[in-house]
Image (cartoon, rainbow, N blue to C red; front, side, top):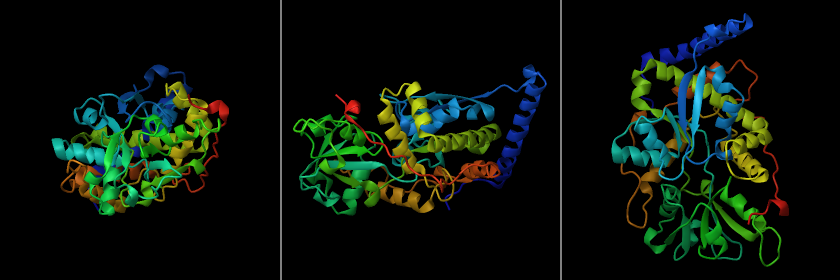
Length: 386
């Protein structure tokens, strides 16, 4: 397995849970006797999101709003992204402690810059990327992309498209790649034959849009949907990344990492159990979406996380290897690939998330999502987008 963790690190991690529990008990003891002044100060931690506040990140906001970070002795600042902010760059430059980013994007950055980052928890266990065309079009699979206008956001979001095309032996130069905004307007206006969409966001935008011919909302029957999870192009997406050198040399950072992950696990379990509340948390954080859309986002995001057979965030080695293979095989219209060789062994580790899960074993928590069931979310005319 791709594990670059020393024996000393393993022993340190095993002790981390006990240390965190002792600290928490001491703090609680101070409270019970009115000695609040004797509590340890919270450790400041910064988390860089991959995008703006929305249901995609509901578990982190739930951990913050429900006090799970504070319970672990942490004061977490959640930083939104978008624009010129690249999460892995912020982490590599030492501007933040942890970052959320898709695996192929980080692999590309690491090979290009030499920065060393470690995937410490694979939040999304499966891909949520779609390519959406009209139901009456002749695009039913990736094999039909040749000669078509295929929408992509770029910024590293395009590599699943090219990996899936490589799997079909399609030359990327035979496809017209259209850079689309992070919405479905170009598709609805007929400028794109098949638009990129995430299950938890842009696809919902379509279902909240009104068909001008009928005056009613579009339905799933109006579209043909290609799920990259069902193609050879699927890659691992949202993961939590940490600074490799700090993990190996800074004992406090390693212990904080386990504590941070314990709180994150609790947060995502809460988002799974009470999606309506989680949607409110993201709206309060400034998502800008209405409640039906946010609830859809939380529900669809949960589908990418749960079930997690080995436990929340545990990295599946085969899925990692498939992502690396896909990233090496993907070739864009300029002939470039995200990576040319396999990343170092330190690019991922299950040590920290497995320790966090072990620390929570004795509690009444569904750590694998075995009992989780998705919520049914529908839209009505009141939820239509303009």
